[in-house]
Image 1: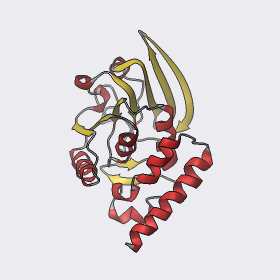
Image 2 (image 1 turned 60 degrees about the vertical axis):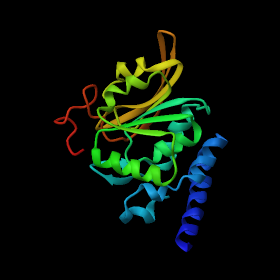
Image 3 (image 1 turned 180 degrees about the vertical axis):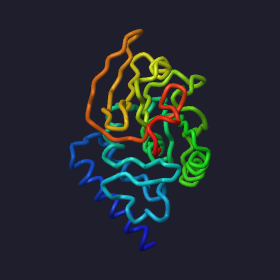
Length: 223
């Protein structure tokens, strides 16, 4: 219990200093980040760093994103309680848990079976019933559950996959890092009928999006 109390203190400090302190103002999002136990989504050997200001390894060459980046990307989606959201790159499930606090349904896809199964176990243990974890090629999305009011991509694509844009609902929003190993920009896309608008937000550093419409295995070595 003393350890759990310590995590609560660290989590609230994280939100106040790293999230709200950097200009994130969405109150529903801030409450979600105060509520979701981030330490449950990181390996035991890194749990003492769960609320630190940076990404952490989660296995299979993947990372759990820096808390501020999670908040920045989520706020950009402007989620409502009725939204259906698609996440590309489940990882350990932390981002999906944040989304689940804010939206009606969350579909998330992960290519690493071990990470996907671990995320399912953690999300179920914490009582999240509105998240569906799928195993597959995230660059193709999940057209069987489209359209989505929001799509969030948590790995860097060489270009924006057209298939993801097509899975957006009219008025839908997508946040995605685009670029290569030397750097990427976080891009925000919105669909208006057959047209799309795009804005570049901030420079970021993500692992590569692998798949048919992402990076091939022999590209961007080391991940």
